[in-house]
Image (cartoon, rainbow, N blue to C red; front, top):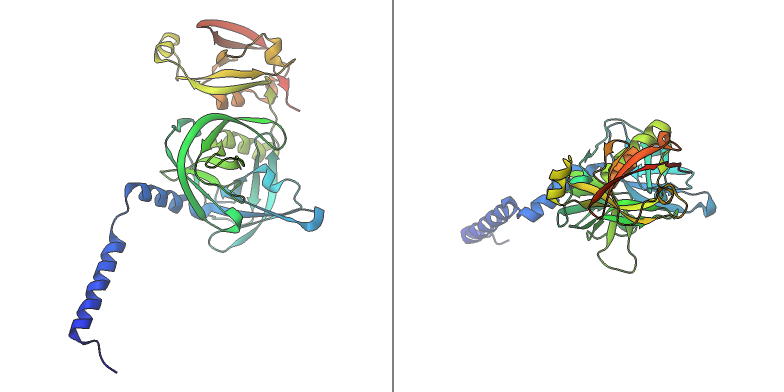
Length: 330
């Protein structure tokens, strides 16, 4: 055999040095943000398998573990009607899962996995998101585990109709590509914090995907963990979070620039009976400031049903107060 010789050895050594330098080079800021988001949250993203009684068919989606003892957030439509659930993690481990509770009204569900000391993600705040902000979606599209896609927040405060027919408010719109199997997986900010739960794709369009804001998801998860279901009251209106003019905020001495504009009102519901109108801006409910749709949902507890409360609004630049009586949800 013929050896490489001194020249050949130098060339190989030089090539290896170039490869080493390339691997050691820092990533550009965009790539660094995406990689950091995945490193923080990726290990806690599970593939959720659901076995259904009818035809023994198997459904598949994603979920994110948020406590070390195995509580996991996913979509209600991923696990609805299942008789057996299982979750597998990127480290190759598989865990039996029990349904703690689900809420079709927000398309959210909580599972409890077997095991302790599991990798878990941190939650951020969806109320602090800005349009144009980088977000990363992590999930298991078409069964490909631990897949990462990236995009931006395209819009905030969207409404989305669930499979149950109800409207979810304060939904995040993103262009981070999603595919079947991404449902229930986390939407993550550049700091590695979960800011949403991916839930739907606009089938007739490209780059239009939706996620439930994590502020809503946390409130729902807490109720599911405590009661196994979500009980709430309703005003029967559709609202959107808006930003008030800074002069209005100063004049009203508001704690935040956020408020809720009424987009639609159901006939014969509490909002209609209270003479509210489309375009009214909700400022306070029952003496509490309403800085967004998530605030309003939080305040509409089951205990509020059938009890009168004061609702303060702004209509055509003038402040008005109404007495409103929320109704029980379901």
